[in-house]
Length: 322
Image 1 (spheres, one colour):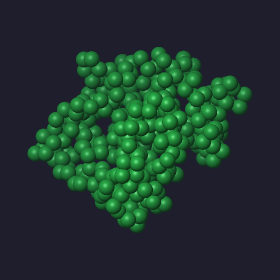
Image 2 (image 1 turned 90 degrees about the horizontal axis):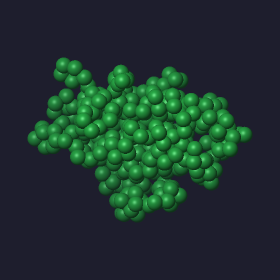
Image 3 (image 1 turned 90 degrees about the vertical axis):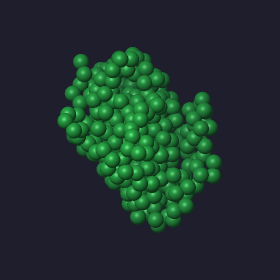
């Protein structure tokens, strides 16, 4: 039975809950617009493309010049991961089973790596609404405008690496990103020069090698690196650890990840506590090893389901409600 607000994508594809997916902290430059008649369109920026997703079917189109929308050929919602079988690969404890029941149609979006990296560098010590606003200002300032017509109107592509590498720190700061402006500029310079090559990084088989490559970028810590790896570098075993997730592991999984559990990791009694400051690179990687040992090769999906469940149950706000 399809959850309210979800979608059925037709023959050969399993269900996608587009609204839950867009409202799960993965992406920031997406918005919903009421269709003429019934249903919603979701419009978003994917690097140098403007995409449109049918909120009911999950079918995705890309904008072409002349006002034409063409089928998007890439696997945006990661059908290749065989989502129907992912819950079967996970432990069947009560919490994981509940999260899978509620959010199994929440997908991981296959993002543009550069946009993903800049987005999560911007996200440090911020909240979803502020991140969204800052990134929107960045695209409007440095991205190429596109009149997508239809109900989308004027949108802006994500800035290219050369655009942000060529900007001054002060110009980037005007987008509201504060001290992160220097990181954004230097990270863009590294991509522009080829020092950071996402194609090469994506081919790395070893988690630690990929983590090392991402940590070489200014403004990228372990959690941000895991976000980039999970959402854009084909690492479904990446498991971003923030205060929300440490709280979930320390409370809902106390017997497994608590101080006396066999997979003990730092915990948080509330979202405002700060165990992350004690989570060194070494401890973070040890925690990741224990987490993937427990949740399996698609641990990143469990992370998204648990993160969404924790925030929803706490009444946390999302930018989009439809």
